[in-house]
Amino acid sequence: MNSVRLKVSPPWVTTINMIEALFDGDPQIACNVNDGGKNPSITLACNNGDKVTALQQILPAEFEFGNVKLAVGVYGVPSNRAFKNKRELFEAAFSGNPAFAYTVSPVDDGYNWFSMTYVVFKNCVVQFFNDNLDDCHGIISTLYQDIAKEILVGEATAGVYFNTDVERGALGMPLDEWP
Image (tube, rainbow, N blue to C red; front, top):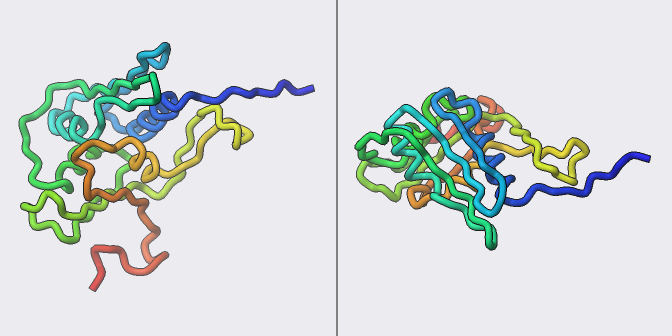
């Protein structure tokens, strides 16, 4: 008889896994996790000052799961750069990250902080182990845009929409080519 595994990851472990998946390929970021006990934490260490400043604005300092709080820290020497708009903010946060494709701000005049900004991620499936009982391998399969919607909930994300890139010509004209 096969042994049945009836264990699921707590929600803070899922959030840690999502943060790691989003920043996994970024050569400027090192993730360090402490997922034990009632005080789990994840830290992102970075030596790019603009990226540190941007990440501190788009990531919350903590996620709350009932009586458990997941602390999120971004470490490094922040720059004193003031981003002129959200497009610039997200481009700084994801520069060099292979999951990131581009940003689009169709109504960005450079002065209106509440303009719509689309942050577009590469068109690929992201998978990570998570004790997922719906999957025979225990993994979660998702998109970078779905991860971003879950974890990038800092104050600076208002008016920002996370998307997945399309294959050129597959669905018609890209946003930057609309009439």
